[in-house]
Image (cartoon, rainbow, N blue to C red; front, side, top):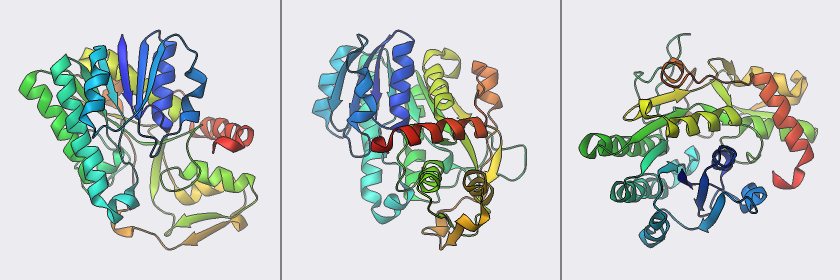
Length: 315
């Protein structure tokens, strides 16, 4: 197949590119490098299947017009603003990237008969109520402009399936971590904790640390996202992916630091947008794709720690 990955130089995007190349497809990557890094995809530059890296913006229709002349079979749309606090501070940027940018990509996919896999997020959900976890039928709650923009993008994507019959799927991975994730800012709590542990620094937790997360190793996430592109069974669907195990941030910090004295708590930067319990039920992904994660949390943390230790210049 011929595949475009928007956000292809980002953390998850580079793993999607890697998987597609390993599966023998021709791949183009588009990224404005506002969050992604060319270093993330440097290893693919000589790969015969890696056709082009385009530094460009999904809001720039001239860039999309040129790229889509390549007649893609599928577009993995990962390009987005992803930071919750940034969306609270500057909602316009998040809306323009995650809604208007998505609309521009959808129009190109419709014009060229290209399937779209839309990367959404578990942050669209309200908190889990029990240990059965969050299914795709769980209530959504736009607790931040980031979540609101992603829900808007989801609805636009699915409208193209219903209105035009355009192959489309919405994927909602839970908190993804692993090699190539940045160790600063928000969203990479495991990477941040590991970096601080290796530097001998204290680990800081927002709030009381009782909030839980379901952490998905990035290779499992990329496999899930790529498989959703290959299968027609998920067209018109919303599909979750997670480990199926949640852990409090307090317990996560202890797992990594291995010393309670190295853990401290600080005031939460956006308590109004916190989701206290996130636990994924990914039974739908197994039913439709026979997908399930391969990495336990402990195994994923070990691989991530090894990578951060060996690649200090890439974090």
